[in-house]
Image 1 (tube, rainbow, N blue to C red):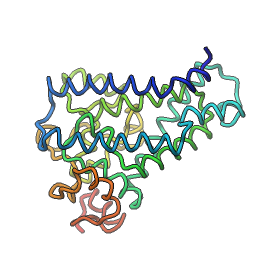
Image 2: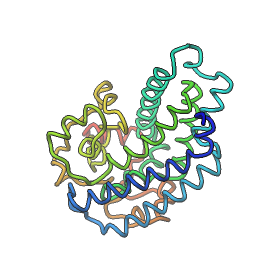
Image 3: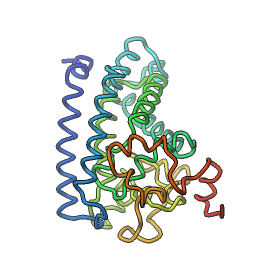
Image 4: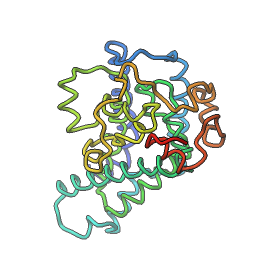
Length: 289
């Protein structure tokens, strides 16, 4: 069976199966060896976070029925994209495509923090009052559609092979659950792993309530971009156990933890919500308002 037939017929089932296995592993790890004490009951958050995951999955499939792999197959069939202009061999093409796609996701993440309108969407992800395996699935449906559009454009420009896109999509789901998890691991292991992949302790800094820490550690899969672009921070100022998770406007707002509240969050102004980009950037830099 060639890759085109396999990805067309089995891509969705493969991704769901891997998601369930990894989700159960990380959820069990969090119970056996939690990194932090949760401040909100797990059941209350999980109902909302997993509910929005179900909506997002159905919506993306409805709007983009071919999904990212289908877009890659379209590009391959028509020779669209940079990699199709060269004879590099499948192995090298897949490797370069994986690196390029990860860079695109990093830059997209930075953009969703820097542009005020996009931040209104992305803050749904950061408004979680704790961080665990379900936080990696918590994104506003509009952000998911925009992200899929950006990803589709990146695939077409790069000319990413369908195999690379399939691997990347699976890796993105797996690492999102892994690096958002509330799982404890030995410090020495974390120090080694974070040269290869974004670890929970590395990404948790990004979910700090402090704006200057929220603008650090944007990576999802590869940890190299934060070091290269100067957005890397080793650990939160207060330490992982004492740091506060979330955004200031949502710590006392119940709407940030409910399913319908998350859907409405981009369209409401919360008390203390930064008025514009310059205000939020000043706060991130530690300057007075």
